[in-house]
Amino acid sequence: MRVENTAFVSCSLVDDLLNQFLVVFQAVAQIGLIVLFAGWLVRRQILPASGVKLISDTVITVFLPCLIFSHIVGGFYPAEFKGWWMLPISSVVLISIGWAISFPLFSRTGEARQELIPAAFLQNAAYFILPLGKIILPEQFDEFARYVFLFILAHNPLLWLIGKHYFLKRGSGEPFHWKQILSPPIYANIIALTLVATGARPYVPTFMVDTATFLGGGAVPLGTFALGATLGTIHINFRRYLKVAGLVVFQKLFIMPLIVLGAMALVPWLRSSPVLILLFILQGASPCATSLILQSKSYSDDSERIGTIIAICYIVCTFSIPFWVAISSTLYL
Image (cartoon, rainbow, N blue to C red; front, side, top):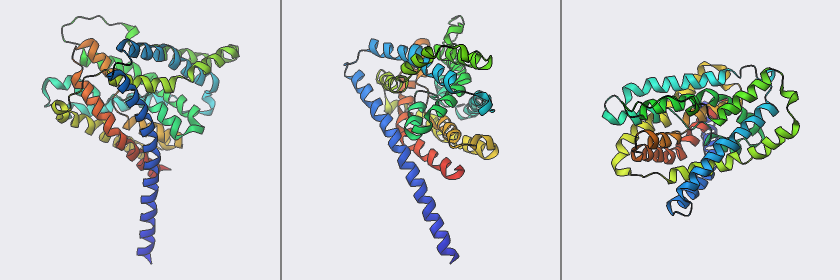
């Protein structure tokens, strides 16, 4: 009788895992379809490179800041989420752990380590994760989006600082500029949080929040399209870089989410709600930040290697993300 019960539980567990995997796989597939379509338009030169930059710049300077501002001013109440400050701190901790792991892992990769190390732990913390959250948790997306915005408050500045450190040619003497890390989304975050913290939120005109909400509605679909268009601009050489890409895939898509699962077991707050569980496992399992491609083009004049590695990560994550979300849901929900 005990054997039969054990078999029943095991069968039920497998069914739950498979169902969760399929749900998330469908969500990733939807994002992948948009990304592939946008990349195809660029590859076929139907959408010119100047158009890609225009779309990306518009998302970064208009739509995403509006989405951040409307969600924080319109729906963020610190008294209802007292541990909000742990989100930017957890971002710093996750980056620090990933950075520490990358040193021994890439110690024998020669000059390539300058590009491999940041790709191994700097994830796409917003553009790829927001649409997944919107599809997986449509009724709780507003809450999920607020958590993402609080998380990237620390992540995005570190992304640009660390990326520039590794991609900038030694001896170039390029001066440091704050505007390179204080992007419009960060400004929107700071301004919105200041209004909330100082109690000035009631003085913000309703029409201003409504306008930001209206414009912010385009951030997720346009951001997803911009992601695919950006990937479509890169030169890819799978045969040449497949071996080194394997190390990046191993750390970014398997070691990092495993670390997040372990952290959830040790820190109950990380798994205190389904939204937080999804947020953290997606942050851990998300592929490389596509902004690394832009930094490589700007600072090293050679984006083929990092572009190929990032493309491989996005292919593999189609299956790895559903796997890790299914595991986290089974363990902690």
